[in-house]
Length: 218
Image (cartoon, rainbow, N blue to C red; front, side):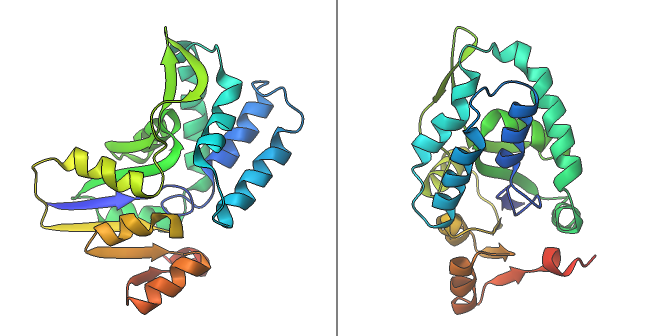
């Protein structure tokens, strides 16, 4: 059995699901802060420049959910997941999923786990990891639970999940330098439309580079 590890945003999907989530929260009256989009843009810039405080960012995204009941909110999350998958799925999405249709696939993302779970369901991927939200007495506290699923944390969680099982090969796909550890963990790493830092490393190490999204090829 082969193990396949997919990053989500700008890898398996053609865009940023959390950016779409922020728009969804604003459109549905969940976010009241008029400067929320401006703050989101700052976090996005910090991410691209390698200066993101992942705890601060995760708590920023979760803040508007403080006091909301998890069960009551599930319908909105399901609606969002269906919409965002329809919007951000493309040729690369379908090619990657079809290529590994008979393998053990896992989506591992820094995106909030309640979003990753529903998006994974829509994509037909059984296993997933994301950044967990703290829930007390059935309601969101507006804070992150544990460590965000980011950078080296992705590998730690995958290792715990694998446990004593063995896989003949491990494939990993990502667009970001932040997932270097994840790509190094695999023996078949692929940089998917990578950022400049990851592109340089992928070239130096002779890794596979997938630019089908940029080319629009089937």
